[in-house]
Amino acid sequence: MAVIRESPEHHFLTLLEKIRPDISGWIGMHFALSRQSDHADLISNPAHIKGKLTKLQEAAGSLIKDLEKAAQGLPDSTLYLFSDCDIVLLARPQNEKDRSVVKNTYQAAAQKAGAGLGKLSELTKDIYDCQKLADEKLLGTRRFAAYEDMSDANRVASIPLRRQRRDDALVMIVEDDRFTATFAANILNKEYEMILAKTGEDAIISYIEHAPDIVFLDIHLPGLSGHETLNALRAVDPDAYIIMLSVDTVKENVVSASQGGAAGFLKKPFSKERMLQIVMKSPFVKDRKRSGFRS
Image (cartoon, rainbow, N blue to C red; front, side, top):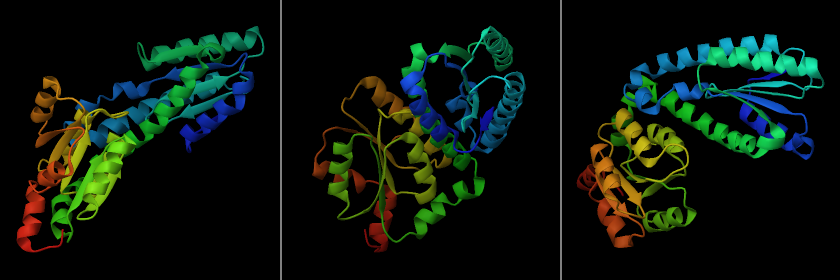
């Protein structure tokens, strides 16, 4: 049995592509331990993130040891421990004895993982779900990297100082639609430094790294939603100046954005003049103008 801990998301994606031409007989077990980590709970106190993640990692480590021992003799078996603490076992049982091992291994592991967290499937029926899972695990890697960054108290504490010490105003655009992102960048990059992110996960990582003066954040994103990302950014920087983007102005979205601490709401499509006006409302950009720094 191969146990994959280094870059498991990429190995899993590659193996699925390799076996896809002949997937008869392949089975998969998925234990979604990541569901035990609630985003809202994790970000409610960044100082506690590391302890909560450590507890989850310990649970995943214990479960994967049990799986490795129980399924050791299964042919063509590969066991994955993903960065978000999910676990997947792929195997190709050859006879009734192997199938019995699969059944017993799954039942014991599912009981230990907890109700509703385990799934046993035949790849002939669920190959597309497995491929979707592979994409989700790549995104999950970035999410847990974002949580790790949020738990770094020293980096988080230095956000205001690093923003203050920078000479140029910096704008972040968080948008997965390429047309909108390009349009916004073309408006702003002649006057401001720019950071682009396509997901909420990458937005959190980039925000902590670069401490931007203003963020334009799309509500509808893959992975973490705009609202979830807003809450995370405000958790690490209560002074973050964030404008939500959306193609609609549904009352729920506007209210939720306001309650989450967004400074405003910009409906797509937007004009050059409107976007530039909003940038100038950021207190950090205003301070740079008053201080005589370049923008």
